[in-house]
Image: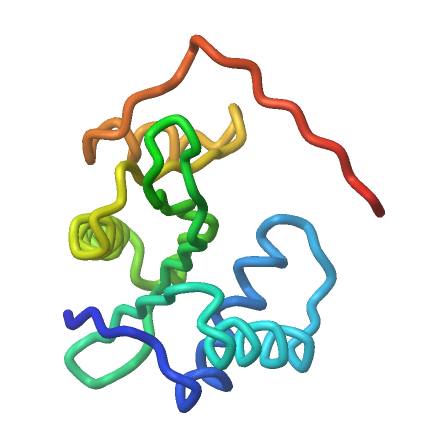
Length: 148
């Protein structure tokens, strides 16, 4: 397995995985929209995306991170927003390898933290994240407002 940074040349193939990720979260399939979204994030340097490749060069998973800032720490932090491994490749350590690369990005950019959220009923994620040293924050409430 190899983890590389996604470039614009990966947008079309990555969109296949990204679309499957969105469908997993009960969104309608939209491959052209996925290509456009990913191409814009990469071209505008608005996110960092790392992809996992197997020994044949097949794209097996990805992680997408967005930069944020902590006012109290006065430093950058990263939001691990998307993590997905193709069902055929699960259970092979790919998620952990992608998370390790995300942690490296945090260190390389001198960021203060790597944060994420997942649904309470995401059994796989809720086992995975503590196993790679993420701590559940039970001290804060999470609120959201949707404009849509």
